Image 1 (cartoon, rainbow, N blue to C red):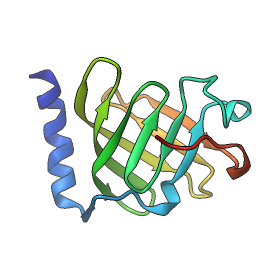
Image 2: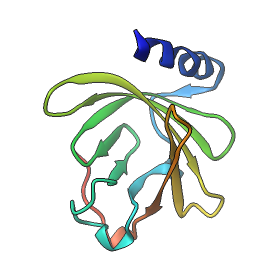
Image 3: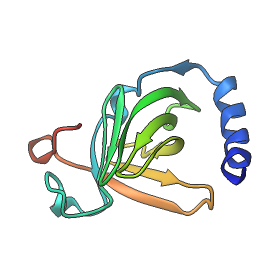
Image 4: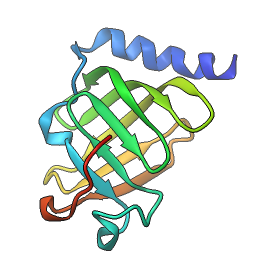
Length: 126
């Protein structure tokens, strides 16, 4: 019930925003807290975002909806599976103006910054 209560404001926001089932291209790529770990699975901060999918270190899922709130804030709702379960999960990301960092803000409003990995050092999604 706590998860549902946390999702209500997110769902309400998503209903008010132009909604697509694909993430905008400027958010695509591999993102990592430590640039030296790009292209490896050495760091659990790994995220790979494509148009239709979001992959993490130990979980991944198909994007159900992607909504922009301004040019640099993206709300993604995805069916995310890990080794034990699948759940509908929402993520709110803010892209820096220069496109080089992606900040995730969770329900505690604690920002977590990842850096865009160079294209020459990225993992394949999936």
